[in-house]
Image (cartoon, rainbow, N blue to C red; front, side):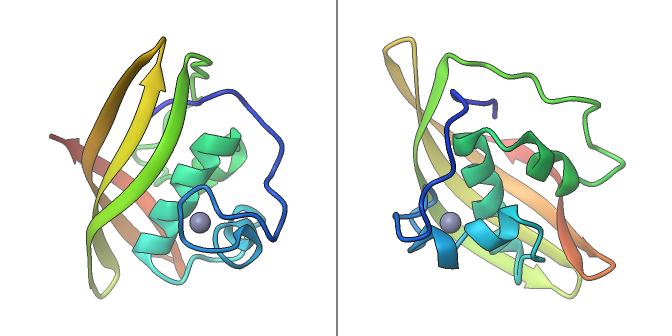
Length: 132
Ligand SMILES: [Zn+2]
């Protein structure tokens, strides 16, 4: 994934970019640093961070072993919607399968990924993923 154009945070009452309800009750608090209650919620918040250009949240929620030194901003991509296909948790490990629709230079596409997460010190973090 890469960034779309950075934009202002949605209002708390606006529909969350991840489609999970009002921003102020969905990804908003997680972007502000509240621990995600599940691997799926962390995955949703990371999608939303890509939409709103929140690099700090992406880096903070990335496992130190796999985290890039920096995230390259690609202003040509717009993220257009998220669908969660499945989420499983087993203790401190989680797997979330999702589809994320994008548009880049007038072309529409969809990213399919199966992402792996672990919980470290009470916080879910992204480890890596397999793209279809
Ligand atoms: Zn959300």
